[in-house]
Length: 180
Image 1 (cartoon, rainbow, N blue to C red):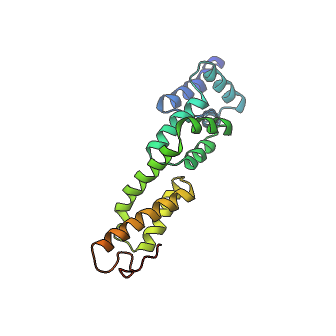
Image 2 (cartoon, helix red, strand yellow):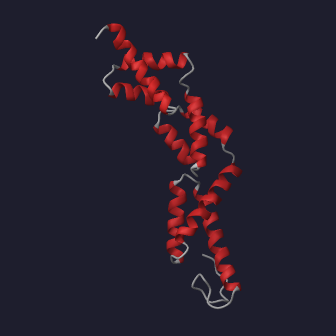
Image 3 (cartoon, helix red, strand yellow):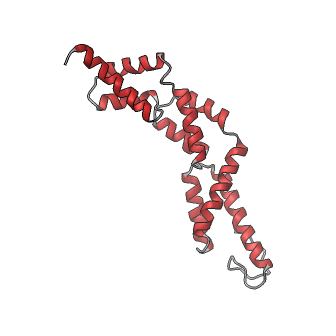
């Protein structure tokens, strides 16, 4: 293989990767080195792509944050995934501050909890609590916000069942006002 064709190949491969989805700088470098190209060669290709503005970690982080938010991920999960993909901490902080405010995250948490609650509605209260907590924490929402949201749903369900009469939904007598 001629030297000219060899230099062209990693660039073509990198462009193919970028044509499929956005990538971080580190992702492209790692993919090229796994394909057998040297670290220097991979770095040169990545530098060229950055010079052409086809590779930009900040733009990648913005796109990834939007995508993660649509998937119902919280700030912590998005930050973890971006870090895993090699995006610098400073870029992550800037992008998250631009894209996600507390209100947006609270709405996402509430939406995820409503969707998930339908799947666990028939379980005992303790299992509902544990499963909902684990589900939301794995999605990267803050512990205090998750507790508040899950307890709010449980308390609302208990109250509505008690108002309907009979044994409380939470397994408590109707006149017991203790909370979970």
